[in-house]
Image (cartoon, rainbow, N blue to C red):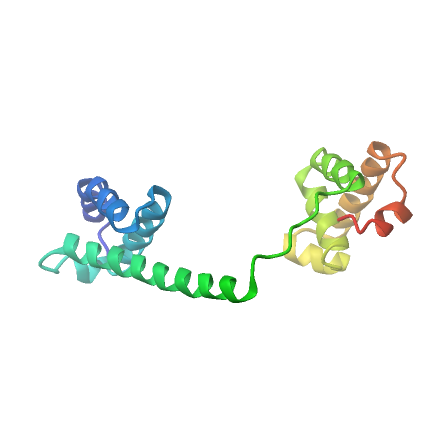
Length: 169
């Protein structure tokens, strides 16, 4: 059984030191935060056994060091692939229609945006969207209808043909 109060106390008493250690090991503050967070998550999962460990902070430092080592191994492999294949092709800037569409989508309520994205980008049926969002199919139909109507009002000069020709989405 895990004791949240004792884990909280352990966290409060060691977090600052552990973050400094993670920074020393990783050489990057953001990476150190990720490593330490993952180490504490693993400690919490094993907290029942870790409370009887003679040096739980040492165990945590070992986990941080191993996670950092794993990260370096993955990065080394990734660098080798990049050296063999070269950098990825540059991505062209979005065209004007894409910028207009994204701006209009941001003006829609989140539910309408989600329904439109699932329907048009993922080719999901109304029933599938209803199942995924846990709402009645009529609600999804309403979101799609209102979302399309609002987009048409926001983008009066942007036709379906222009969107499809420019592969906007």
